[in-house]
Image (cartoon, one colour):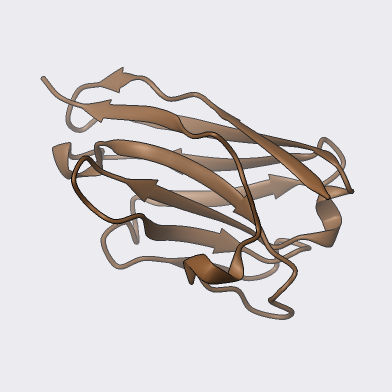
Length: 126
């Protein structure tokens, strides 16, 4: 069983940057593909990005492609989401989650992820 805790959420102006962190404990991070998800007020949770166990493959939702970068450091049990050129529409609670479902590629289907963090708030506003 893996435990995940997100941090790094903040209030940031449009066009700004922010890096979210996800630290894991329990079972080694190297065993799990990791996804980042977000949930805006009144909306359903949606997948943002994911990364395979070794970091060799990633996926990005169209809405963040070219602006967000996911990375991981298995030695430090850390996963990161670098967010650039933030927009008000990026305002949401961001969650990291772990799955054992994917092998060489990854996806962001919510039902595939079995362990979730508590979330961190990102607000993009002037």
